Each structure stands twice: as structure tokens, then as C-alpha cells.
Image (cartoon, rainbow, N blue to C red; front, side, top):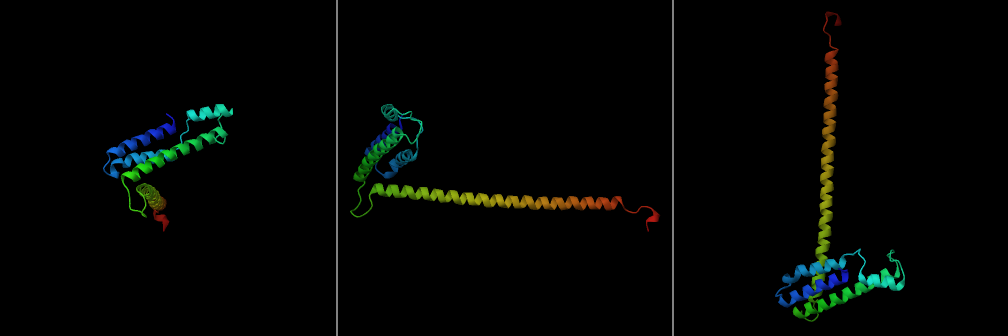
Length: 171
């Protein structure tokens, strides 16, 4: 299935959910799936791109070819129009006071905040993991040093014991 038709199908599902939704929570996961599809890049060649490639006479192997660029721009515009229509429907169903942000703007802002929060948490987790790794490496280094000193001490003790004076002529 083409990315544009997948997106349009997702938008249709969200719109169908809008008719029966009493709260934004009811359609939250559908909107999240829709917005995540917007952020994804699909590597497969679309039907539209095949037609554009045939009409321009290009092989379509290059991402900078005119057919690839045209397909990307047209798909993005189609997707944006569908998102704008969805935003209008959501804003109609859950209107806000004049001068306040619309429901759609609140949804987008909240989503962006959650994405930023997730990024910060990922960075904090990475820092905690790095700190933990440093502590573990420090312990391994210290244990290795202690074991090394123990081996050297045991070897020195054995050499002293092996070369001890056992005869009366050592004095």
C-alpha cells in the first residue's frame, strides 16, 4: 500500500473515531499513529512515483531526481491537506474560546512536549548507564590491582620460603 493511501486510511479511521468519540482520549492513539506515519519515510516506490518516473523518463534510482522530488512534495502536500481537514474536524468537535489555542494546536504542542520529554529521559538514561559502566570498570580495575598485589605478595612469600635457611651454616 502506498504511503499516501496508508495515511489517508489512517485519517479516515481517526475521522470515523471522531464521530463516536466523547473525549480526546478515545482517539488519542489513532492521532498518535497518524502523526508517527507523517514522520516516517517509506523506501518503497509509490504508484505516483512510478507514473512520474515514466513521464519524466528517469530511472528513479536517485533521491534527487525530479520524479522523486515531485513525488515527495505531492505526497507531503496531500498528507498536509488531509491533516488540516482532520484538524478542522477536531476543532469543530472540541471548540475553544476565542484567543486561546485550538484543540489541534494543544494536541500538537502536547505531542511535541512528550517527544522532548522522551528525548531528555533517553539522555538521562544514557548518562546513568555510562555512570554505571564507569563504576563497574572502576571496580574491575581495583579488584584486578588487589588480585595482582596478592599474586605478587604470594610469589614473594614463596620465594622467601623457598630460599629460607634450613641448615646450621646459614647464620
